[in-house]
Image (cartoon, rainbow, N blue to C red):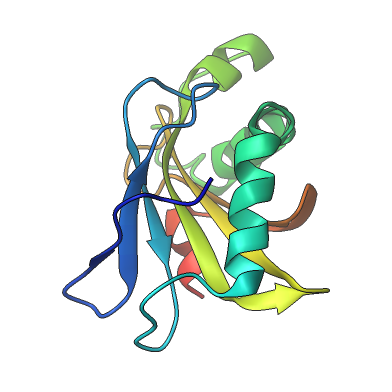
Length: 147
């Protein structure tokens, strides 16, 4: 199952709306990066299919990162005092998927996939997680997947 309607963005990459029911019933935007391509590469197709088929496991992996990332931000912004005190269940409830990035880069025939999240405790930068299949390749702010 590939995205049904691909659109070219003003920036040159492809975009589509998808629904990932474990995250939300509302459509999410998926950004498909590549040099003026008209469709997904085979590597991106494999990554997208993995995402759809394994979305519950991916969500669990990403939510499990939340408490550690919260602590990093809490320490980083301690002087400003704008990170509220939260416990683990509250942290996970405060995380929501904003969009997905299917990257040009791949490993072993599968594109890297970026997940950009809104996090209620730090609304300006959000959270970004880069994965290949179910394995974490990096965690940072929401712009992390553009680096």
